Image (cartoon, rainbow, N blue to C red; front, side, top):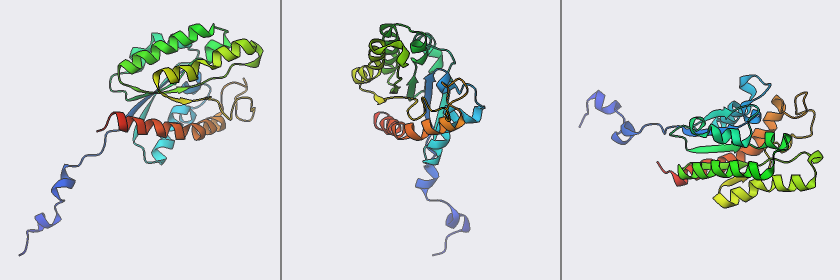
Length: 211
């Protein structure tokens, strides 16, 4: 039996009803390190991370909610408008400016705790990015500051990336003239090293929010 040409060329019903999966909505909530301070837009952490995810076949929109100079308390103050409805995951990178200003670790911890509490209440998956203290602040301050991140990640059972500047901090070839902010090559190192944990974050989104 012969079928009309239109019927022969038509896609199967199942294929006709399939629509591309919506992109995963991720917000990078942070300071100058996520904002891309001192770099062309294309070389910042957020666009480079999104490109790296795309290269792995991950359809994601990574929004840049980094504000240069922000402390953890500043991030808390702008949390609601920085993380809009529909956000599925947050990469939380705050605290470096607290440390540079010598803010008491308990103040930083309280602000980050409230951020995590509110994101958890919204059923948003979170990845906590740790920071290390400068040696000149002393061992007591450094220890109190650095244990904020693993403690909060454990409290809220979130993914944790121990040190956002891993492989870059202290390497003048990978930082800008200030010796603090990564240059384009430094951002490349950060993205390469953090990518496996971000991919785990993507897996958690799929597990916690199946389509």
